[in-house]
Structure formats: C-alpha cells, structure tokens
Image (cartoon, rainbow, N blue to C red):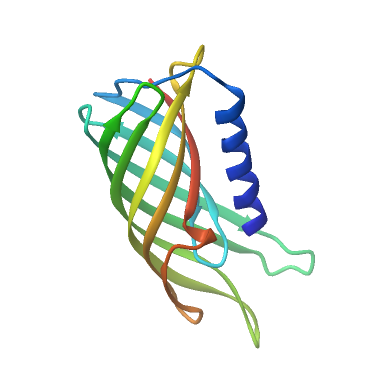
Length: 176
C-alpha cells in the first residue's frame, strides 16, 4: 500500500509540474462526487466520496469504502469503511484552494494473525490539511491531496498516532 501512496503522490506532483495554468474555483453550494483513497490502518481502502461546500469557506465530505476479498483457497471476506470530514477553506489562491479540517472514520478490514486472517474493526480520528486544484479546460473536476495527523486504532493490531504513509490521501471529485 505504501507503493500505491508513493505512486499517487508522484502523479499529483507530475500534474502540478506539467500543467502551468490551474485555476481556483468558487465551490459554494456545489456537490462533488468522486473517490478518495484513505480509509484503514494496515491498508488503504478506496472510497466513493461526496463533497458539499456550504459556502466559500465551509464544506463537508462523506466517504464509503467497500472491498470484497476472495482468495483462491476460499473464505472470502469483505472490508468496509465509512466516515466523514469537516473542511474549512483557509486560503483561496489563483492556483488552488488550501483547506484544513477534521475527520472521523470507522472501518473493518483483514488482519493476519497467528491463526489466520481475521476481520478486525478500527477507527481513525484526526486533523487534516489539503489542497484542491482544477486544470484549465476541466473546470468541474477537482483533484485533492491531503495530509492528516491523527489517531488510528485497529483491534488486535494496535494504535498509531502521527503522520505516516497511511496519512497521505488523494482524491478526485466532479462538481455538479
């Protein structure tokens, strides 16, 4: 999963470097639907995501992740996660919107134990900062990259606090 996170970061940096003209958008009263990669502790779960900006400064986001695992030897399992964020637009620049906020998530995912793989429940709670930018010619498609600081707990695995590779999140939303 760390390799996936590194690839997402490199793609975002490449987009920023290659595209010279980016514009900030007024997202007040707009709904964005898309995806985010961020839920979980031992692995990220990609989530369907909905964002709503109440005005230029405040927004909310809801995420739902679902992944069905069917190993070759049988015993399929389902990992899921659900949660949300409160977002506050701190700076609206010509090239991007910079925001901060907080989020809470509950998730269920597989963990390898001495007796095999078992499903465990966890939660995360934390603060975040992020950017959202729009490419010229794609005024309704927003790309976001976030870094969070928080507590993540998974039964049978433990609790973490801080910033790590699991704290880097990326997403894409199409605004209606």
